[in-house]
Length: 240
Image (cartoon, rainbow, N blue to C red; front, side, top):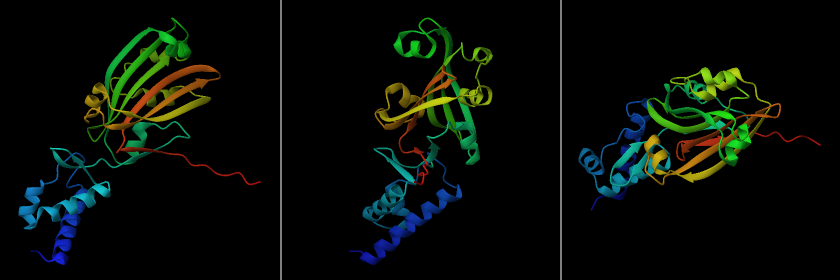
């Protein structure tokens, strides 16, 4: 039977060694850390000792455990303010990530249904865009966006093969009013495939609508894996 103090010490050493590799960049997001049996051999310890170390890494948000697959380095959480309209590309680049955008769908068509009619008017023309934002080559968020062509006619000339539509709109179209709605969703099969996560994984969805002097401009839905994203709002209380 192993001495308890020795077990705790080995567990801490395993955690510290793996944490150091993650923070130094030796292990990158989505890299798999050694399997439990491999760590048992490397450190000559019990499964319980290894499990304690990996559990601590998971509680600190450094690794994510995936059933029957092992433990993987987690993506650092990204924070976005809900009191402004952030540029995802700019935010990620400021945090040191290599940003990429993958356009999945682009179409120009007539608005249909009540939801789209509220944006552009029934039968009016709009552009629909779907794409994936990437950080260091890994999926960061899935986006579906509708843009009212009556409000932004020049957007029809953009192909968005590399430029994310949010970045383009923030640089070309002023907005005077915005509405945010944030809610939890379970990843459906399509979104799970785009974000490289399991179907049913909890996600955060941000739904946003913007207007310019009363004219609807865009309606967007952005979906992020729940363990990789949070939204922050800062308020200052007005003194009496």
